[in-house]
Amino acid sequence: MTTLTPHPMTIRLAEEFGCVLLGRGNAEQIRSRIEDAARGNDLPVIVDFEGILTVSPSFADELFAKLDPILRQSGRVEVRGMSPALESIARFVVAGRPSEIS
Amino acid sequence: MAKRVAPDIRIELPGAFVLQQRRLERLIRLLRPLFELEEPARIEVDMSRLVSIGPTGLALLIAALRRVDEAKFIGEDSALIPPNSPQVKNYLMRMNLIRSLIGGEDIPEPITRKPTHGFRPCLMFSDDSDYWRVSKALSDALNESCMTDEIARSAVLVCLSEVSENVVHHAEAEHGFGAAQGWNKTSQFEIGIVDLGRGVRASLTANPDYADIEDDASAISTALDARVTSTPIRNSGIGLYITRQLLAANGGLLLVRSGYGAVYSGLTDEVRTEAEFMPGTLVALRARTDRPLDLNAVYQQLDHDHPDPTSDDD
Image 1 (tube, each protein chain N blue to C red):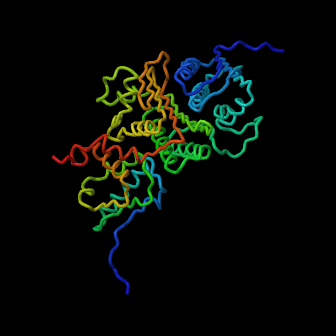
Image 2: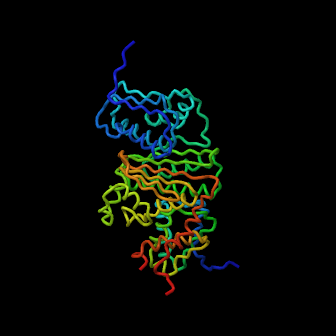
Image 3: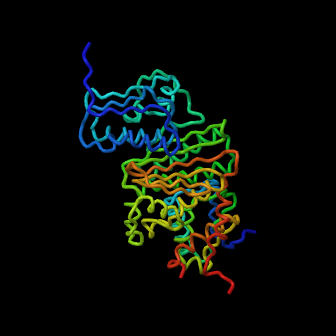
């Protein structure tokens, strides 16, 4: 029997962009995609970092620190599969833009 | 036989121009006439006694020659005298010293070009798509020549992309130039990224928070700190800081040279005010391939070095 349970949208970064994520411009495009999906959907958007070796500081800043804080705090964007190192750089860049997380 | 016209500007490049303070400063001093030239002139660049030149010096030399070429300051009867050493001459041809001056056109050359492996010619970049391509090409070359592991390769790629992105977004330069070379014998590689733009101090003091920085050395030193940028809305100012931390942990070196300032950053920092003016910015990265070059280890250290003040347990 076919079920009609809706699936959350998952962005598998390694599959789409490779195992090293670079460039502010790339991150900006991914962030826009995440924000558009999260605003237009009741289900959370899952951003999957499984398989990502590392990211550049500018990529991390553009993706994590500039992500709409309302979406981040509401739980409509869910980040999975981050290594401790990626979690650390994500925390660092978000802390660097305090006005945007208030 | 017609007598050769004496050049208006004669630049002789004798000896070795490698990544050492004294030799690099000598190269900047010798190239100064090319940086300062404001009108067409008969130029003679004599490399006959050139013994060796590293990737950083090469990127600087090509940037200087490209500047006068694009401005159409290279007058009739100008000459580029090749090195006497066949090895150095071949190296310069393979690294595109001549091609870079004629827009990358294919010209007859006294060498047989094979597919590049372990090196890439000096590459020029101008915009967002270019710097990406150049970063990838140079890191691929280092991977081929030094057999670095995936962790080190990704770290090099990240640092290269950060440094070259700075040129595109902050330097206000027409172009950036990048060159890289690895040495298996000494387990080292070097990357040089050069632009002839506005320099670190002019860029940083555009941010009112840093407008009172009065000298180039202080500007560079400040720019190497975390979260320092000329454009805080767009940028985070951590690319150079992370690069510095990465190379320090590796036992390598990060050099930033701009205006009269220079910072040699490794396990310790040496902040210098030099006698020569370097137009734009020169960034050189030297790393060891026999030691870890692990960006994720640097990221994990951030929690310790920069604890988040909003998450304390008090």
